[in-house]
Image 1 (cartoon, rainbow, N blue to C red):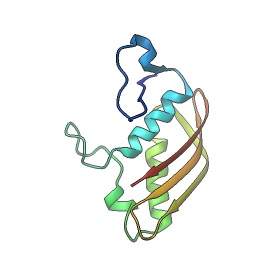
Image 2 (image 1 turned 180 degrees about the horizontal axis):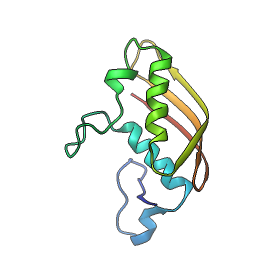
Image 3 (image 1 turned 135 degrees about the horizontal axis):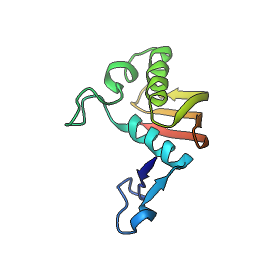
Length: 118
């Protein structure tokens, strides 16, 4: 598995040849998970059916069971993911901010995923 690294501004890294990639590593799978979670359903012009259903199942007045199921499914469908060991989330009731943390078993080892999604 090869995944292009992101820089400190969350942009793709260029100019350093193979050093710009995570190759066959936990970091590659972790970045793939984060990228997939950040992509909103319908946002990608090449495939409108691809993305996380933030508006449809996560944000707003949704039950935690619905958004956790949505996020778990999205992570489990990521290339290189074997299972999710621990999953935690905290939804800020007055904002559109969801903090997610999980321990994910990948084909390369265990990844710890944490992120804020708004």
